[in-house]
Length: 312
Length: 194
Image (cartoon, rainbow over all chains, first blue to last red; front, side, top):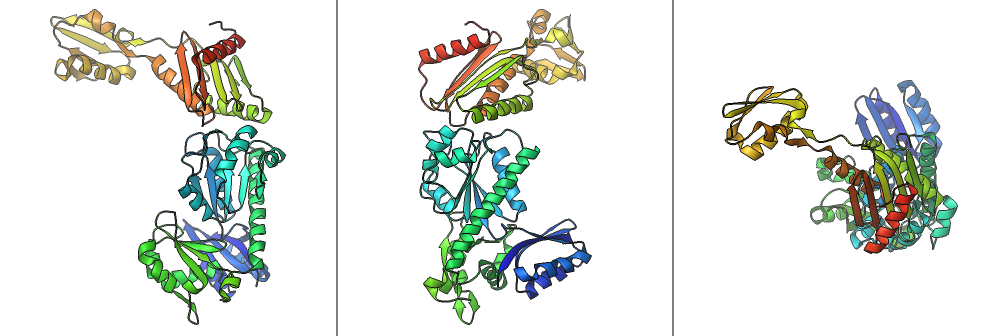
């Protein structure tokens, strides 16, 4: 069954029917948000059933749109947290990607600025590597990007999308070895993106990120995961009561090949490992339960089928 | 940029130049400095690396003294201030408290302040500077230039006076003579001889 990431937007009126429909179809709800009278559901639904879901949503005044980034966690890497890079360029990127269903985390580097002095420390590197993809929101000069990017990408093994003011071709020229995606014409700004050409650039950026993640999905599909991360999320939500005491908007964040469980590793890692998925197969059989470098969270990395020879 | 008589950004990279023009415009506008700066010349060379901004300010508002907004009336051992413009009352009270102590400064009603400190003359109080706009303006201007410059340029040299200012920043140490030569050269571009 091929799942398609979708977003349902509608009112609170009879929204439970949509929730039940997704469950009946064998889909997974990644996030359900109620904002005043609105309901936003991000879910993975079988591709063949999307049209039927649209028809059922119509009388409820709900809309179903494809959101290619649902179920992904993306690091937006900013050279620093100073006024030069925040809030404008980096927050524009982070916020825009959320519209497409991504969960974005801002990673403000401690010493990511400067041509000669830019560097990435071990903690930053590890945090970025816990994501599905990293977007480097860099500045205005090709010369600077050329020099500093070598230091900023050192040790990063997740796909990178590089943005900066120079054109896409110039970015491609000044980065060696190449990265997975480029978005040119999007440099440091001192205002929010609001002009049509700026919004177009954000659209282009979202498309580029989708493309890069699609390539990653294809890679993962060659050696499928032992369990789908949204399914693992359902198991955690059903069988680990402590998760319901977490106040974070997404107590369990779904990634393309893993989960971030926002519970302290020291206390709950064993419980997570021991969770039974089905027929005696436990989480520890199909995934590594690791301490996340983000706060004290738990990072669950699902193993591929070739490693476990188990598929649930 | 509207409001500035002269505004030029030069850089070896055309894209970077265009971006810095917008950044400078946005920052000056956000900090309400467009009416203050008359000429501004910015040079950004990422190869060196070097950021130089030189400029000229318009005629700035003068210092605000007590006589500008209050009538000072000496009577026996007391000096009574009748406040005409309440805008400066808070900084005035702070100043008087600092100089003479709270026990010697009384405010019987909203628009009257009485100073009872011994030996104080009316002339002395009239000449007190309550607000110096140039000080905060200088800070705002330098903050604006710090926001405009590329972030990694942590070695800075800045100066302000006689209605003109310069700001030089780099990642590397800046030799004094080089700074002076570059600044003088850039000032010449906006018609100012040092």
